[in-house]
Image 1: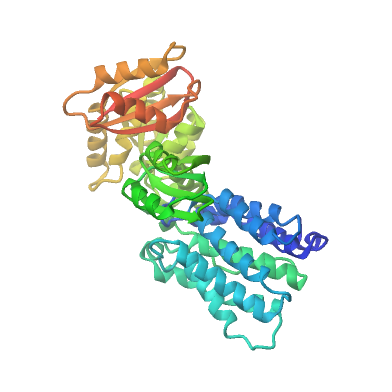
Image 2: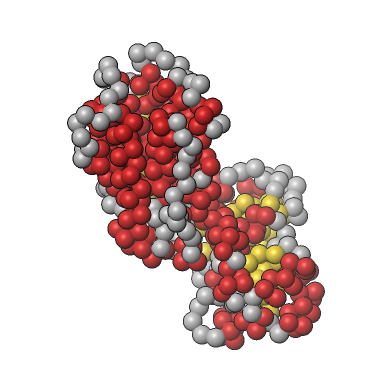
Length: 492
């Protein structure tokens, strides 16, 4: 829907629909800029899902519309960005619902209430994020003349927002290092641009060089915790302060927003089940969503590598042949260039610097790959198994020249012991636990489980299966799309 199409709707619904349209047009760009608080590459998607609920709730009028919008967007909120966006919308909706005329004063109050509500809802506000952009929008409106109208105040807020977005790069060290703007801040400015475009009867503007990516955009530490977990709580007298205190030790990026009737919880944790259990103590759980941020980071890395042509630009790369899209994302997350066949392998070596390229092979691929590698003058690491092939990739970025890295990768691959569970076993959980019991030795610290296509169990549940028989281990499980195995397991 274009901005012109949106004008046929009720003004509130039309403004939110135009905002949704503007955000949808740039969602992939915003996802790829996402490096804070973790580089899981879903800020744009989360904000779009969250905003969709507000736009839908606005379709029906009535005196309670502001409350319906606020509750709908809170229930739908996804991720840090979505949770904060829900509070911005709530503050603005409550302010606008209290006035009879949408004039400049109403607009100024809406922007201030939005920013204050969002800041108050976050335990530890961080500058250089969408919170900063929201505050700067409010400050820009407060510099406007008292006699200007609603649309002019929105335009002033938008100008302040775009400037704030550009400045986020210098406010937050992780953004400075990656040389990107804050993705949530950009998303917020895009949303307001959609609203401003509706009010002014124009199409959405595209700002110049605000969101350029460089290779440093993918240079970031992995998330400390693995699972982005969120759920809705319903109850008659929810004690959110107590719940927040109990959840805090389980992870970070904790947000608990709402009231005594209904609340939304968001946390990054390694123990989603424990977080849910804490919520169940005080209310009924609904809308549970658990995202594997390691997989999301890998998908983001693969997208950025493809957009920037990292293989060709950097010269040196580690190349690994994989059989499924899921394995490709895992390999990309470890810094490798995944290929699916011989043709892609040859192209990857040719595009890089052959003498600086390390190719990792395993299983039936090894003999075929060896001939190609020798032809191009690249190096080869032969791993005894798929888990070993993936494990050794972490040594590619180590210090020293190619020969040193090849030696370290080979040693690491050979240190991985592996086991597998075939497709079709009657009890996959029991079979996996039996394999783990036999595989684990005193010196094993990490177990990686690759999950087959026929196993429907979520990765975090598989990790719990392993911990129930080996609680001392660090465990990582990934959906790998394997067709020959229910599980492949690597122990390091």
